[in-house]
Length: 524
Ligand SMILES: [Zn+2]
Image (tube, rainbow, N blue to C red; front, side, top):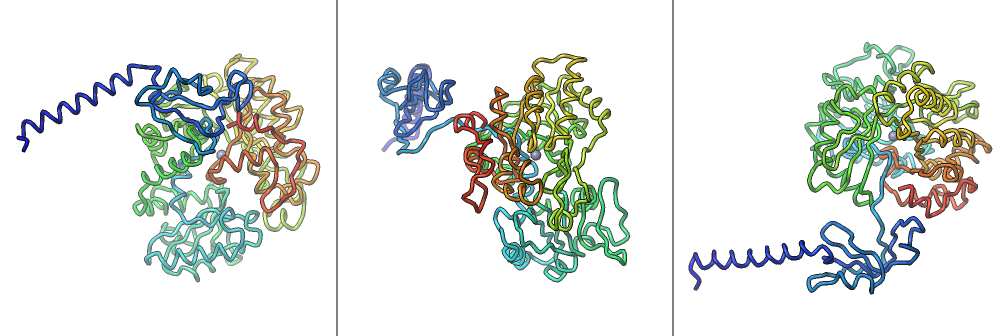
């Protein structure tokens, strides 16, 4: 039997040997800890996704966290040691981690703990209500129920909730349901009461409560008025519900979702102010030593004053990526700032409730926007801007041109986001101005036929999300998912960019703007 000191000595010798082996393995920088082989290897080399120096590799050698060799079996021979392990892909494909250029991890983290009632999951109205009823049945009386994702395009037969309907379904729980595009919400009487308001509540600037003829709130709330019910520090339901959810766990879940999808870098482009301190919280989550994902953050311009961030701020896996403006709205709601009016039909006029001759909205006056743009340009920021329609693109390009003339910054690399109706002439102009374009291509998957038949008509649908024109004119084009506006599914996005086949269809859509597989892979 070994005495205590002998056991300690044995442990010390074992640890010493292990340490010496590990030091030796680390010091030998040509040593492969792993060889990966047995499947296709996508290298994203400049001369082709599947090549490296013109040859298709079969083996990848890894030392620690670094790739040290890519090539044939012969070429990685010198990296093999007695401790090298082989990882067999068994026919699967190995490729670099993907980048999502435009995502919303704060909104995603908060909303992924809410009940999902989206048309991505439930394309039929009865499925939406079945999910809601299940949730109500299993929630203790008095607890807040929050749901996310109602949408009249993704769930075409959707029966919109009213205060009365939600009161009948959930008399004992505050219910708050956020629409998929997050500009409208529905609530019941218990939610109104829980937030400390009643029918006499005043509309805030930039938002309103819908009312029935007798002045009573009907349970539909728009824009800034939603914030009163949801995130206002004194009355917000989110503050009340936050105790019920583990917000840190939700963030980590969200990051794990990114990682599972194959993303290794995300840009939080215009993080949503869902609760006080959200940017510091995002940085905290992003800089965890075992975070699977690198994070870039571009705060909304009107939120920047809450931070001390500078254009080059960096903390481990977390970095600043500029600031963000919202210039126009979404095509789904008639907010995209188009050159010509939207189509006028029962859906646009009565369901989405567009006005006649609707050409969307610009959220800034031209001169004001250009002045603000110059301010951030001069301060050294990379600026990104939500710009879906032609009128938004025109104004952004004017702002960039003016700022660059006054203060040339050849490396500014300002970004334009979503770009539904980017015209060929605006693309050429943007390319000359050094713009980085980023496309929200999954619109084609989820809304393709709606864009053509209901919102914009044949001619504009043919040039919607013009990826071919973009790849012909820009050195770098990116694609983005914009989660949680749409699911974290880069594979769906790549498939849509390269096939243009909408959901529930086998008919490709505006194929003249198809992107090649090589270009699509380069865009993520
Ligand atoms: Zn977005």
